Figure 1 (tube, rainbow, N blue to C red):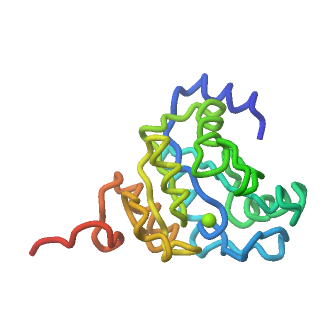
Figure 2 (tube, rainbow, N blue to C red):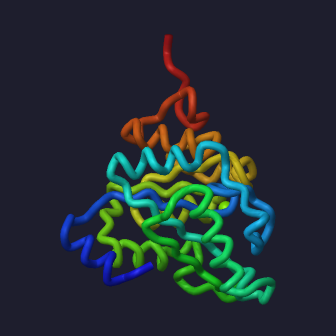
Length: 200
Ligand SMILES: [Mg+2]
């Protein structure tokens, strides 16, 4: 994205809250090193959910580990083509950040490192304390927690394998995550198994 445009926007409007979103398994179906536009399948309702978050004033920022680039499985051009298809199916995002690091040689940008978050916060003018991180892995939740955000684990993608990661909320999928955020981040027992059952 255009850093100059983002900085101009941040100066004009002050710090804004954001919803940071993992990509694979969160917005689009997890297919394992997605590298082809024809494999991009956005989850049902993702477009409407993200539009509702945008309408509520949240910036929408994808942060994605793409070790497949570092491992040589696909190129950055392949990765960008997948992003273009994601944005075609869902909507144009305010920012997309990726880390090509391999798991064996991670920098601070690779989740759960917060490098990508801090870049986005600086470039887009984001108030992290009012922001959320939504993802399907413990590394997403850890990244959001380290950056001072509230965190939502969703059960799509690898989510069911990471239920014990200590997320603030658990949601079935992106639509439920959006409802939790739009509800002020309060646990909704019907959506969040991590929250206590209502007393009768
Ligand atoms: Mg994921």
